[in-house]
Image: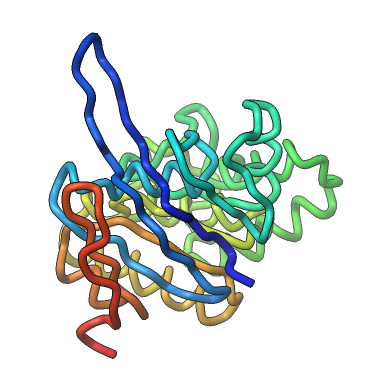
Length: 230
């Protein structure tokens, strides 16, 4: 069973009398353990597709499934419940809480899901070690480099042991070396944990890390194949 699947999905945004067709009937599935890149120019529909897969938005038509459950018609609270337990997010601008340390940012999803203090300590320590930030655990985001902040975001996304991680342009605000490090950490965690990663990018240096590259253009899937490295 696919971790996530979309069937004939459209998304139309209306502002006044102007309609923008962000997705025009997309059908695809993501298998457990995949490391998949969504690529295409700005406006191709990558971010919209991630938002639908992540229960951050609803399709205009069509269906979206997460672990076999149709989430297309869920209300706001039901979508929040699905996100909290099943989906992790990594954002282009990190989206860390500025007043919290790296450790505390990673701990937030565990607090929301009701884990005990002992469970939280164990899990956060595991993740801090996994992203090589032990020495920076008690630093706030403004005391960390961009690459370090994104590693905190990766650890936070994994905190609640989701089945799906969605990353929107995870290297866009990083230099080449930090971008490479972030992609290598994501690749290693995908291999070690088996969690499914789907990430949007326009950078060809990034999408070569993927098992599969899905190319979008004008709201349509125009290519669905293996990475150039595979």
